[in-house]
Amino acid sequence: MYTLFYYPNNASLAPHFLLHHMGLSYDLVLVDKKSNAQKSPAYLTLNPAGRIPTLIDHSLEGPVGLGADLKSGLAIFESPAICIHLCEQHPEHGLIPALGSKERPLFFQWLTYLNNTLQAELMVRYYPHRHTDDESTIPNIVAAQNERIADALSVINAQLESNCRENKAYLLGDTVTACDFFLFMLVEWSLPITPSPLHFDCLAAYLKRLAAHPTVVAVCEIEQIDLTPFKPC
Ligand SMILES: N[C@@H](CCC(=O)N[C@@H](CS)C(=O)NCC(=O)O)C(=O)O
Image (cartoon, rainbow, N blue to C red):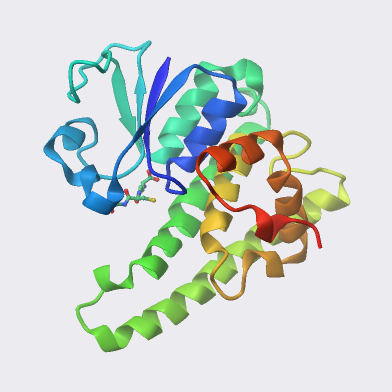
């Protein structure tokens, strides 16, 4: 049993995909980002970084500080850490490659690349004012970030192109993994950026396939995320 503190289309989306895909029992608790609830004293007891998401794993010991109605459990923050934890707790779903397989280190490689490079560049792109107090430099930061995001997307596109030549439909090969759900979350955020992720041929074909995946369809419906941009023409 899990509780996911989330906000629609935020970094909680990847863990939400995994919880749903694995058919796990979970509650969603909305963290009202509009009122800065992620910085409330109660939420900070769960996640001292004041960010979304946080997962409570009620099967593990740990204090929970958000009201008496929330059962105790271990609070975990950082979206990729939550994803890895869920995959490792439920390996029968195959969302992380088996220990000892050659895909396992590549899983960590891609998940880290997605979180540490693409996601980090997106954060600067969408919150440039956090990186300068000179308003006039903001367009330059945005333009630089658009290029850095395009570079990261082209690295991913090249991997998908090589996979496609071997008839492998997903980032890690033949089967869907947590990396695919994490990537889908990040490209969803990247849609308004030029060049769009849909500008990259292999990435676009892959995204259109993933957008039709029952897990993506169901969770996007819950979070009211529009999948129209991914519909085949
Ligand atoms: N590295 C963290 C980043 C989480 C993050 O930045 N979340 C955003 C929402 S997508 C957030 O909480 N922003 C609110 C804030 O910065 O106050 C993760 O991957 O979980």
